Length: 340
Image 1 (cartoon, rainbow, N blue to C red):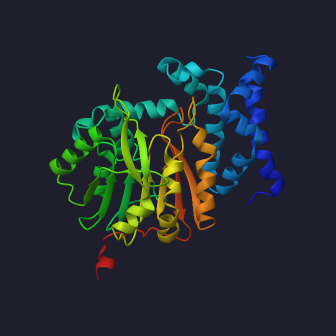
Image 2: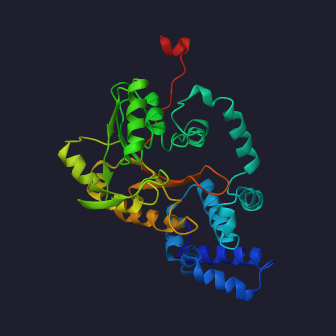
Image 3: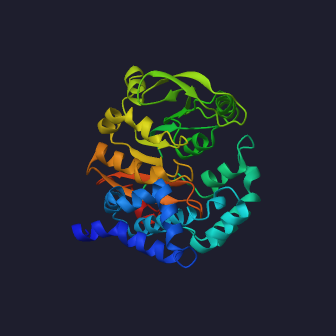
């Protein structure tokens, strides 16, 4: 465990390294200007949340990823067009990517020739993350199986619901929540077409209170619509949910708000969590230094924390929270000795 002095210096250490990298191409005035206008960098300069988050993590690989993610996002502030320009994004990722872009690219190419095996109703890049990279199947950290009860919050058209359905037994209960009406129609078709009998679809919008919200669809040119929201806690209470083993949440930046409405549920059931932390802000990643701190305040010291990112440019960065002392059972090899 690092000392308090070491903890306090993590944000400053990363900031110094980032400034050294960027100082070769930008003068001091320009650096000050960009740092002062970018919320992610301003939070890094403040340091508090970054230091707390880094201290939450014990796994060496997660700590290494943490540093690479911070570096990439800092550099991105100086090349903001790389956020939307694929050519520039690739160039930036070759130099500063959180994971190896060539290894990632090879996997993407190989998956292209396999994607016909999967759901043709789902966008190819989502299939790649869910099935090719197994984004929600991290060994000894987040492994849904057997008779698990799962809340898939932000199920979209059903890629993760399908994945969880096939990983678990017929007696599992996989609640697939999707508020977007268009995506929900496809989610329903996927459930019925592929006979996902352990999936329970819900056209529900979660928030931190029961209220009417101007819901904005992810479908382009779709106008905002009024939609009634409820909390996770309210849904659990009204539906007499007796256990939750896993919660997966990827809701385009609404993670913090939805978590606020699920505090009682998380404290009661202590489920494994897989929460997207790459959303937020003009250039994304402002959830990175906010959502983990909120989660820690809910569950305190009862969990171990891990991060994984599934793209070189840090998109699809997930915080995994595993209940302490939880051990996944080791599969026994079927041998003559074990069969006696």
